[in-house]
Image (cartoon, rainbow, N blue to C red; front, side, top):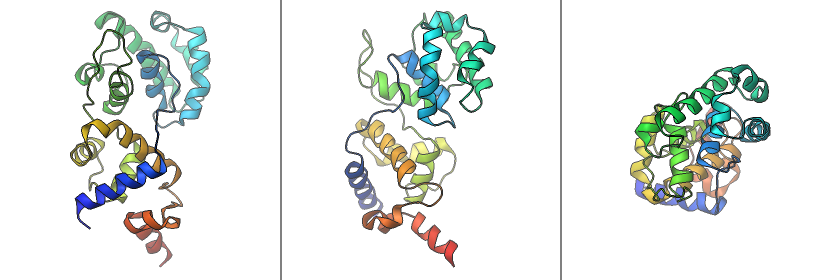
Length: 227
């Protein structure tokens, strides 16, 4: 099977398993999405969705969060991993958005990654999920500039033979070359869900699916462990 054929098969199976995808993080604006994604690093989306209602209830606006006590924010989001660092970051990024970006979330990668605690993964989610879908009034719909790579995508991409790299930036560059630009957002979400529910880090279920078992490297991993 050539790489082109492999990519086509992977795309077919991802669309079979997850025909319709959208981010599971609750949000109502570019700002609430930005904060939610920042909180989601190494934390379950369900956990983030548990804490954000209380966060937005106490600090409903960007200005409110910019003026918030970091200690108070810590108490609200303490269920998420690394809540102390994340508390400092979301307060600081709120302040920076007000002072440097006229209280608006920027839609350019080079500007988003200047915000505290915001890397390419978070920036890509915000660009693709909000600005790429034309949700922001007064801002033209933008094309994605990158492919969201989290721990699931990195693991899945390696097991499926789509990359040999471990650095997320290198993995992202490989995936951007393989999939159509207008599908980067949905494909990355499908790969995330595939990693969560099928090609899990431990006890992957790909071996139980006839089609996935033909192309997924985790099957070889399982067989090697049994020897």
